[in-house]
Every structure is written in structure tokens, then in C-alpha cells.
Figure 1 (spheres, rainbow, N blue to C red):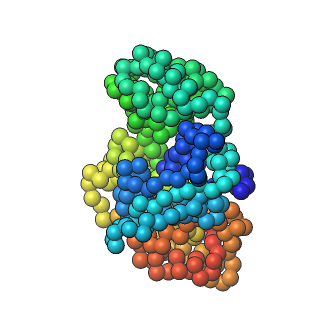
Figure 2: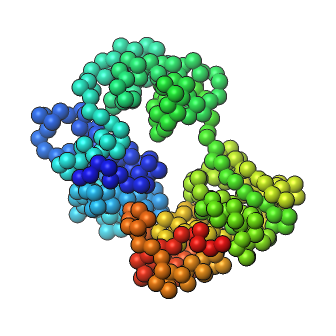
Figure 3: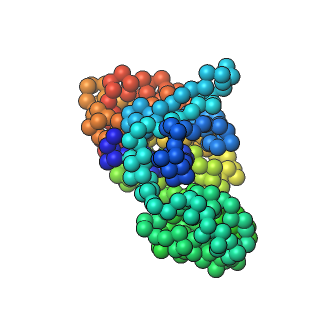
Length: 380
């Protein structure tokens, strides 16, 4: 296995990273000489609730797990033959790590093997337990790493969090202030921090959304790529007139908080800001209804269709924008377009269905038939 062949999407998939991290947790706990066989992980609702919530997001996560199995391959999948008739394929499935995968995972997740065992880590946690107002069991359950930092240095960082009690702070700010300027170390560890400090006030990190408001708003258009967004606010291509244009890259359209005032920060600009600001914000945060058509326009590839599906989870009325896709579709069906390996898109997953009739009956079949993609920037 090639340690440099890291999936381009892995850094954005926190749940998949957690799953892979569990393999390393197990390998750290059990030295090689004491293992009786390859390490396996069973997929259960208790350990992996993100898989069992149902819907498109769970299907996408399972697809990514299968890609890691088939195309890399890090582990093998052993399905549960006793699962219920209507239960998902992954219910009770067991993932078994393959030989040679450990070094790849340690490189991808930046988890180098350390000589210090989990037992020694737990001893340091226990010795410093009196510094925490909450229980330390969760902190001691898994060895944490930051480069070559010692256990004492890392646990001292957790102790330093106590100096922020009473002052609201984001998780990224807390991480940077306590762990050597590393703002992302605490990503995915909010529950751990809250267990150590039950009274700590962690502010939610809002998603930043850029929106252009024209003089008159008659619809909403989500646009995936920056160049196409900047062209659209300058009136290109023909057909964008009258749309409030939303730059959809950089935020997860399916995130629950995208339509809450606490979870999203709208940056509004354009000639219509003063007239439409309140009306648009009330619509965005589902506080009032508008009869606006809502469209999405992005790359004509599987990733673009996945974004459409994700946005549709929060904005039910969104559809693929026919005007934007027609020229791209014509270009694709004329035999043009690029193969997935020519643009490092071979890891993209076919969403199968988006919920948009035009995308599901026209765009996706065209992509599958031609086995090619077209980037949005083609249209100007």
C-alpha cells in the first residue's frame, strides 16, 4: 500500500477518521507480540451512530468505507449474514485490518507509534486527575499524540483549559490557547473536554456563508465554485439576473446549524442588501416563507451531485439549475469532458439519487454513460 495515496476527501470526513483511528487505538493497546490475529472492529449503532441515522449521509459514509476496502485496501469487510431482512448492509458488519495497513493509517492520521504504552499514559492521567473537576476515565481511555510531545505536556494542555472557565470560547480558540497554538487538536473531542469541565462554556463555531443580493430578488442560486460565483454576481452567464447568489463551497449544506441564527453567519453584499437583508435572512433561517425558486449549480460530476443532495436536506425545494447545466451537458454528450483519473476525482462516490428529478433522470445518467465529468468554470 502506498502511504502517499491518501484519499483527497479523507480530511473532510471526520467520522471516517474516527473509525480508522479506532484501529490504531486497538493496535496501541495490544502490542504485536500479544495479538492472536488481525484486529477487527464491529459496526454497531452504539459505536458508530452516524451510520445508523439513515438517509443519504449514512449511505455516503458506507460508500466511503467500501472505497477504503476495495481501492486501497486498508481492511476487509465481513458482512453479518444474520442481519434482519430490512436492516442496512453494514449492520453488524466486521472490518478486519489488512497486513501493511498500520503504517499507512499512522501516516494518514499523523499517529506515529510511540514507545509509551497506554498503561503508562493512564498512569500519568491518574497522577494528574486532581486537576480536573470532572471524571478522567474518557481522557485515560485512549493515548493522545501531538508530535513528540510527552504525556505530561499534553495532559498539562487539558489542565490549562481550566483557566478558560467562565469565559465563553470556541473549541478552536480553546485548542490553540492550550495546545501549542494548534487550533484543530480538539476537533472531534468536544465531549471529552466537556466531561473534564462540565461548566465550561463552548461557543458553537458558525458556518460562514457569502451571499450576493441584487436590487431585486426573484430566486436563490447556490453556486459551488468561487470563479463561477464571482462571474454570477457580475451577470454571467445569462440567466443569473434576479438571483440571490450563495457561494456554497466552504460550508456543509446538510449541517443542521446552517439554518439557525446561532449556527450560520451570513455575509451579505450587493446592491440589494438594504432592501432585502431582513427578508432574505428571515427566509434563510426558516422564519418566513417566500415563493422563490431555489437552484444549485456546480460541477457536473459525482461530487457536485453529492453537494446538491446535501443542500437538499436543508433546503427541500432546491433543484439543479437547468440553464447552468445545459451547456455542460451538451459539452459532455459531444464526447468532451475529462475522465476521473485526469482530475484526481477517482475517489468520488456516485450518490445514486439526489432527490432532484432533473439531476436523477438526466445529469447522473449522462455522467455514468460517458464516464466523464465537466467542471463548472467551463460556462462563462
